[in-house]
Length: 140
Image (cartoon, rainbow, N blue to C red; front, top):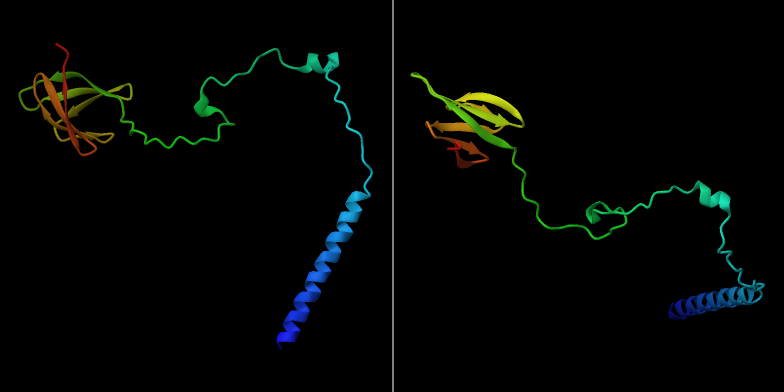
């Protein structure tokens, strides 16, 4: 049993060596080609077809050849909302909120685009956005 294993490994080694020697002989017999010189002058037809613009990447984050990935944690972008005014009435007061460049009239406990109105005072509005309370004040 041991003799069979050693005989098969010896035959495999001999076959591999024969293949290597044969390939090396083939490589040595290849004709050597002289290096071709590259013509550095361009024809005018090729130059005329090129655009006149000089393209440069100004924003390296958008460079398609940049292989370094930006792994810095990004801050979540909250929607742009501002308090434009407060409407006071005897029964209920309302807040004029500008959300995504559109103005909404919202009452207490109403929700719009994830923004919930918690409290309305004459000078400020308390809102809840993503679980956090914020106070928006009117410009004085």
